[in-house]
Image (cartoon, rainbow, N blue to C red; front, side):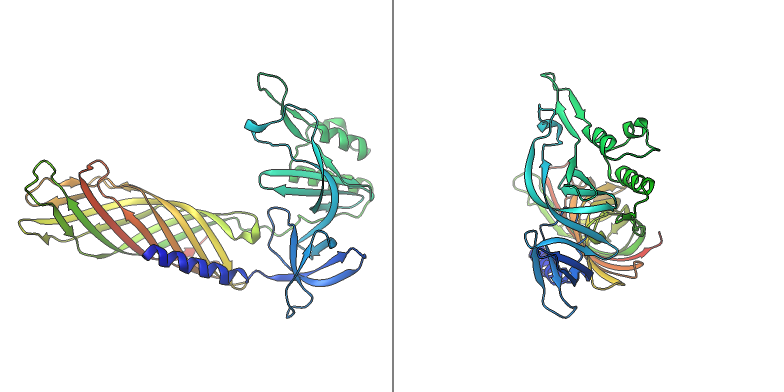
Length: 403
């Protein structure tokens, strides 16, 4: 029931907060070559979009533009895309699915292409999942793909690479300062190609605009994360060899304890920095006094280092505040003296199973945060299969980002 309520809350929160993505100043050019000033929804696309949302004014209704109705659109000082019918090679880059043909297999498609560098020679990018293609044109000529293709050359499945893009650039983009050795070292990567196209345009005295020249993004955060755990342990100890003896069924007392973690957060550089991978080594403990049973007492003394590894998603409310949700798989490394002690039965060494955790929180000024986190049930006796146990925890976590 708790998990269902948490899932419903996160779903509603996701729907409500999605609309908080900003509409930013820009323009689009329609098929009649009319330039329309507007506000475009900046999703910071990782994959090239197929449609965009825009408003003619900040207070007007949201409308949609498709690739069929617009020649280009630009969000000022952020990004620019052009619509073009191009020949694109979609051959797989997966080693298990490589083609046995050296030449690209083109299909003609209408795509939004991201402009990386604009000038006498312009560089474009197309991204779809793990497939990345770069394209170019010179002085208004048709846009062509820069060709790089991996393929199997023979029946022994040895992978080769067709680096035709170097020959294309050597042929079409001449500069007195360029030597063949420069092209031989050129990588089919965004930063390398951007540098090459900027150098070419500057060499030919062309005005050049680098759309990737942005402010440095903060892609790593180190957070101190103290907080409190509310934990409860229930035990069922069975003795199947003696059927006449009833099992011990004990619910140990709920404890409010301190926890302390240090979280490394790696921000993914797309979709407006809304996604992050998180690692949070955390010290936590649970210790009870003796609980009276029918014929004996039982108590628990448990400490561990937890290592949640997961994904976080942010919902921006404004420039200074944001909500977030995260899900993690939690590895648990138990302290050497962690046991459940019985007065008349052998004591049990705690050996936990891993579990999952789900959190919802708020962050202010990219510094201060508060999170409520729910942990799924954690088994306590991995090796003693004749014992059942459930360890339940809800956490309140305070955060401070100092790096």
